[in-house]
Length: 154
Image (cartoon, rainbow, N blue to C red):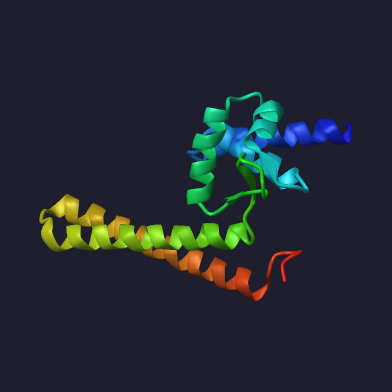
């Protein structure tokens, strides 16, 4: 397999994985393309490489920005938007998960305070335990990531 074939296969497979994870296929492909790029890429460059519209690029980049994976950059004198992988994106991704688990824990705790009834109470208790354990594992993962920084970070 050539380098170009391996790159295109990675981009396609990341698109499939993103779709399996609840993102769009395009979001995964953008993520992969930016991972493989040594330079920031413009919307036009991404659209040409991935054969998707600039509108789709814009929509999916906003999702990736919200997840703190991708950041928007600018070149002086150039009106185009450029994109690159954010510094320490995986740490930011886990921190976002922890924030979402905090919120989920609060929602379930409020429901446990107000909802009465045998099976509902049991199901809510199980859900609370799930979120608490998942959050604990994410906190542990974050601590490990911060103790042993990503290769290439300083």
